[in-house]
Length: 108
Length: 208
Image (cartoon, rainbow over all chains, first blue to last red; front, side):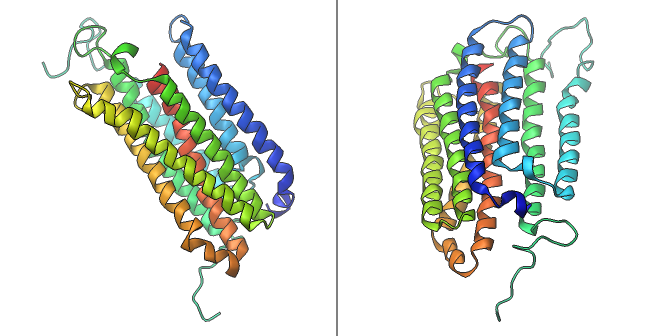
């Protein structure tokens, strides 16, 4: 870890490059939101850009690109798995409402 | 060295291979992912389950009264603050204390800018609008205020921690510069996470 960090000045260039990429991608996010993609296109495009931006932040600013400690990676793997479960939970509710009775308000 | 000191604040722990503060911060961030993840999951559930029409329908962009310009401005503010935060750490790592502190001060200023913009141009106008837009207005505003409110509290937490390390906490540099640099790295990890959450909040709440 310390050997990789020894030449921090080299990293500064990467930080500035990531900054430029994040700024440009923020503008791209706003621009593509004006386009009306078919179906869930807008959601997919916006989340893909956001995920890419988040990866840049995690990899470069949070130093994951240079991180070797297995305990940190193990924690992150668990984190990703449980996050995926959490995001999949709404899918389990799709059959809660009888399919023919669409979009009734609950509790009425 | 009569003062009791925490072990493994600089040298890696023999079992984990990292200094303990870093592993602790990552474990904390993993729990934070679940905290915000639950809210994003709730957002998906409520939005997908909303009726297509009627009073309970999901509000359109005209009805949410959120300005992508203000949201976009705050996105840029947080991104710049992430850069200044990592630059603060990099300068400390290169033994440049004054420059590191300067970048830390810039991060603090940007963090406070985010909060001021959020309150002055978004929260306060929404609360004082006639009729007011409150968490009780509809599901969208309930989620909007919960998610941005929790995120805003995290920004405030960052402000407090960064202010501490600029003020009384900076004394540590003169005693143990490596320890201080590591503490700034952990602060940075947290701060970049706060930025990362906003990277998702911005499109989800303001654009989609």
